[in-house]
Length: 165
Image (cartoon, rainbow, N blue to C red; front, top):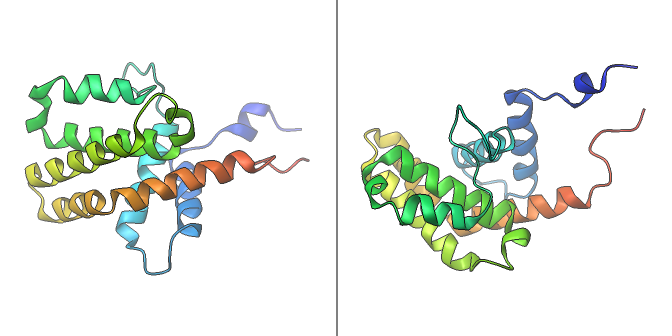
């Protein structure tokens, strides 16, 4: 039998592929592939970054953390990378963790906030290609948020992700 660490270890690529496949199954065939990859990367990134990370921006534990970090701190509103991070955190928490956040937070309000963060990031972005992608995520924030939520529900409904040996 292989060591448990070896069985459970996932690298960044495997994690990205896992979320990409899951979101692709929930998306229509004509979905923009760049948007699909971007959304999978948001989930993969946050799956691998702790809420207590010291070397990277920690994954927020709740939407209150996002509010405190990005709404109350107005100085970050002029930073494209931070606005993108704020949008991604709203997407993660209002989407993938919607069921857990719903009792304490107005999901639709945070979805609007998240879309706004993406629009702000797009407006501040120097790369026109990246600006178009971020703007598209902002415009379709709600549909992506719903896909994230659906993927989360489907994953929780699966008894085992690893096949028994």
